[in-house]
Image (cartoon, rainbow, N blue to C red; front, side):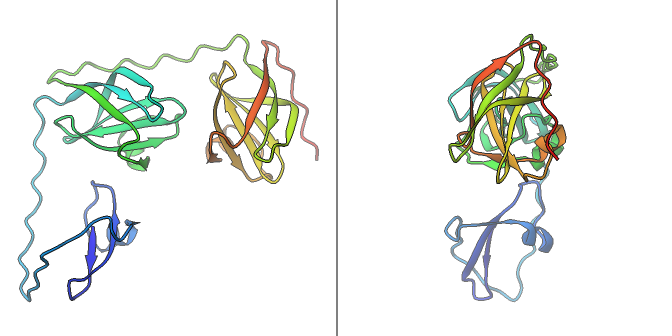
Length: 259
């Protein structure tokens, strides 16, 4: 969107989700864009402006997108990724890794946007709306197949318990301070969090093999649990680290926090 003043001079640019309707409230809530992002020209002015035509409803696609190869920002690819239908002209391909990464295509299979959300989320119409917008070049799909009889995507397999989950590690924060024998907190079968309290509660999550998957932080007065982990702020993957991760089927019980 481009706003102009009464003389037709551009004053600002904004954008919002394509599913929204332009009105006073949605304009106020829209995200500000750089003043050079969009432009208008040949602005005509009149005391009797014509009424804009109502948008035509999208026509159902006879052969909607079904499958594609998904390519994420790290170059990893996944073939036979199933599309999730948002509406008649929006189909989303998603892959879970460190984030739930998604590419939306239109009914013809042409890419229209990228978004991402927490990897613990489930892809549906509501989570798609709430997901964070990413640069259009962040992720891609190729070899998009379209069919009037799309196969049903397989149900995700439940994660297999790790025989030897991560237990202890040396935590290294963004200032280079290290703490040995930091205990892991289990979030799920493939997410174990090591945390250290200093100026912030700094955390590193690893998978069941001990490989780092993400970093987060929260107020140092919080207690680490599944809820506080979900609410914690995401940090750059390189912010904190763990080394010397030990794994055991008989992890020692972490000591209670000091009062």
